[in-house]
Image (cartoon, rainbow, N blue to C red):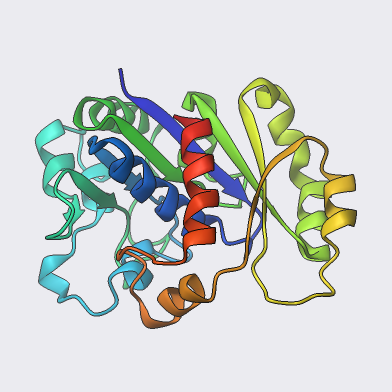
Length: 240
């Protein structure tokens, strides 16, 4: 039985990096079939995960959702893989695409996509869009077995959840709250954030290696920061 994991957070909370690393950790933990999926058309994931790849080596889920029906073979052909991780794939949009490139997908097509993804993988990690009006992300939260709610130590994050936190009330029984430390700054209000966001289960420490990967476009590669990896492994165990 496959498992859906939705990773949600405010803009610039680091949720994409966490979603990718959790997906990689799930793969490494049991060599299962894992899919990472980003429905973001504001910042298409292929642009920052594979910035050095040829255009011909990348695929877009938009072309699949633009068809009359969503078939398993089409989804399979849209998965981007790396040589060193068989059975691990990335699904998303390409760098030159935006919300005007394709027609807005219908709920039926998204349901078909999710059904096919469940057939293709043991774990599906969905990097949800911060905009609550995004239909794919909304349905992903409803479909998810676990929702990872990422918070970070900024006023921007707290303001986002003050305005949008109500969307998680209906899913409270399957939410795992995580604090992500994005910056190496001793003055970050970690205590205040923990006080504001009750029941935080895991703290993800700042990682210089992760920041380097984000800057150099190598997020698809393994990371060697042991402290960071240990915290991601703990999160992977909780959500699996």
